Length: 160
Image 1 (cartoon, rainbow, N blue to C red):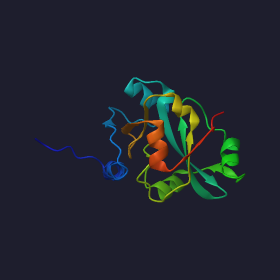
Image 2 (image 1 turned 90 degrees about the vertical axis):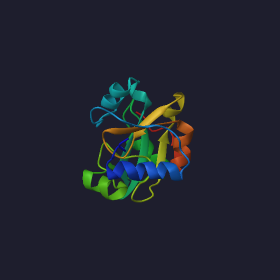
Image 3 (image 1 turned 45 degrees about the vertical axis):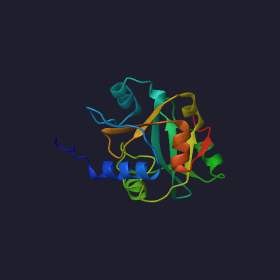
């Protein structure tokens, strides 16, 4: 039997899952899932069950927001959660430097640097949620409580 070779970023993500004692499935989609809608369609789930890994800059320092794909992030709420810091969207270079992943493949764990993290309370309504698995074509099944535990994140209201 031939062992499947995964991209290095996916292997890094899988190793981080193991370190966190997580046991969900890492799945390769047929197409890259650069958007919550594409990932949801590929999995046959609602867009709200997708946990987007979004990197913002809080007063110039990277932070991670795990947001439900069912809505946009309200940066005023993110600012309030981070003590009133000015919030701007990180560019692709900032995302890669802070996480080690490309946009569309940013996973919640296995990051290049540990980031302060918010986890969208809207994700708690779903029995299972899915996040990126280190590459735009890979996703990971998890739960809200596991996501909070693995990231050390703070549950927060971040949606518009």
